Structures are given as C-alpha cells and as structure tokens.
Image (cartoon, rainbow, N blue to C red; front, side, top):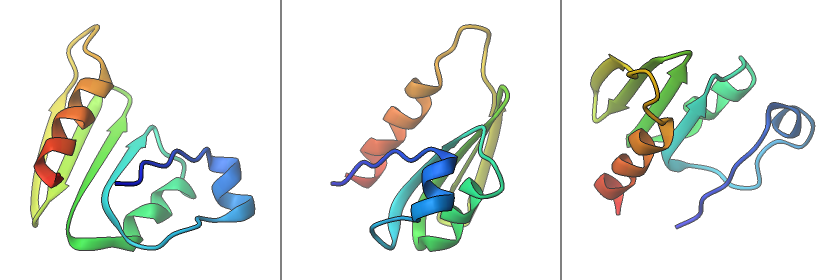
Length: 85
C-alpha cells in the first residue's frame, strides 16, 4: 500500500511519481488536483470533499452527503481504506 500526499503546487510543477490508484482522496481540490481522478482504475474509490459536502464514487455508484459540524473528514476516508485492503 502506498499512501502519498501532494499539494497542488507539487502536482503542477513535478507531477506524480506513479500511475494508477485504487483510491483517491481530494480535500477541497483545485482543478489541477482533480486531474488525479483521470488516473484511477475502473473499480477505484474516489472521495472528494468540497466544503462540508462529501462525494464517494466506487464501482459506478455515487454516494453524497454533508459532514456534520465537527465531524472530521479523516473518519470518512479512513473508513473507506478498509474497503480496498
């Protein structure tokens, strides 16, 4: 398992050092950061947080909801790691 974290500037200047992802987690992504979505496998999980809105796409299904006040985003994506391990 490889877990990599990039900021937008690094992605723009250097790109990524690997291809293909089983899971992509984007926290208030810029347009450049959204490029990571194009390089996922068909059965990959994509989690996007924009403000307090969360969307989770996996296996062609889309789940959307709103974080409760004080609910940490980490709880969302840590739970999803178990679905791919």
